[in-house]
Amino acid sequence: MGVYSVEKLISEARRLATEFRRTTGKALPGVSGEIAEHDAAKLLGLELCEERPGGYDAVGRGRREGKRVQIKGRVIFDEEKSGQRVGQMKLEQDWDSVVLVIMDENYEPYEIFEADREDIEDAMDDTGNSTRKKRGAMTVARFKIISQLVWTREEGEIDGELWDNQSGH
Image (cartoon, rainbow, N blue to C red; front, side, top):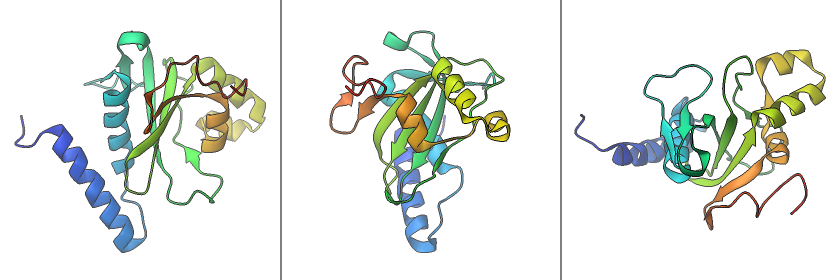
């Protein structure tokens, strides 16, 4: 066991990534994914897999009991910039849902969306672009449309019945 707690290390990673971006104008590679995994696990009751079985990063507890979850993170530096993408979704591997942690410029989460495998596969079929489908690529905007908002900074975890992007409620 290390000298520092994971919470302390994640906090420091947020600070360093923010400073790096302010100083260089570039994002620090790989940091947002690690922070997103930590935040999703903590905020949604997921247990991160020690050894990655391929296809998923965590297993659900509580209301997500046994669900195999891929975790993606995206830092939004400029709300006006369109075309931002969700990291590659491993369509050929076993998993049940994908969680997307949306973070602000300080690498703090402000929204988390979750989409079931079936909804992602249906959306990929609708794209018609076989190259993009093979890569499991999707824009953040498209992911938000097919998913459910499951957590916000203001409200915490949201019951799935309260918010449904697909029906407009």
